[in-house]
Amino acid sequence: MEALSQRDVLRLLDFAFSRSGIFSADRIIHTLQNMLGDIRIEDLPVSFTAVATDLDAGREVWLSSGSLFSAIRASIAIPSLFTPVKLEGRLLVDGGVLNPVPIAPTLRDMTDLTVAVSLSGKDEPQLDEPVKAASDAGQSRKGYQAAIGQFIESIQERLATEDASGDVNIFDVMSRSIESMQHAVARFKLAAYNPDILIEIPANACGLFEFYRAEEMIDFGYRRAAREIKTRSA
Image (cartoon, rainbow, N blue to C red; front, side, top):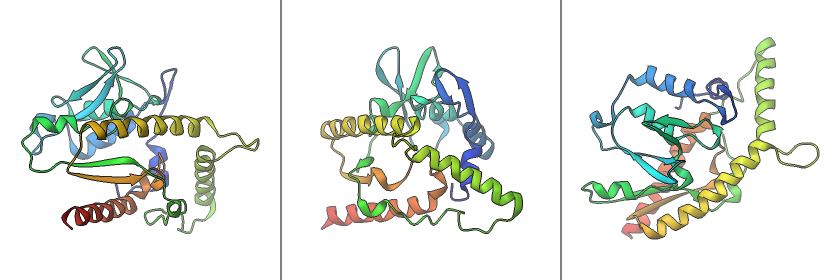
């Protein structure tokens, strides 16, 4: 993840040309498969469960066996953004629709401590202008490389900013709507299943497609985790 640049992220977004979603996410999954091979969940050294939402049944689905990447693909199918997945006769989308902080699946395991990470923390104004340590934006570019870089940056600006009329674009509307819904559901789920340690990441810490900031976000997560553990042990 730390090796991803802004260009790499955009290359992984393959248009679906479908009425059910903008991107297919096939390229993302194929890239992971090429890196790690074909893996079954039951063969993993650590217990793992991916959570998806069954659109027809209107309930969450726990995927704890079978193909790892099929489970991941279903669990990241953000409605309208990525196309849904048909798996074992069910039409599945992102589990965050019904359960953004899925603590319940861990109750099946024998554990000493439950640590939950919520991406629905309150916005922190100082994070609106983050230092993008993992970004390649500062690298010098010449000729056609500069033109490509400017084109990619213009696409990102269009995805993240308002248009000339002052209206937010469709990507921004979708992401804000989904985030607002997930924040409300996350608060409800955390009240029902209280973890031993809750690490809350501010919602404005990172954008939807800013995977190229992995190094920065990993470091941020470590610091927030250390802070919560210190608070608990104090």
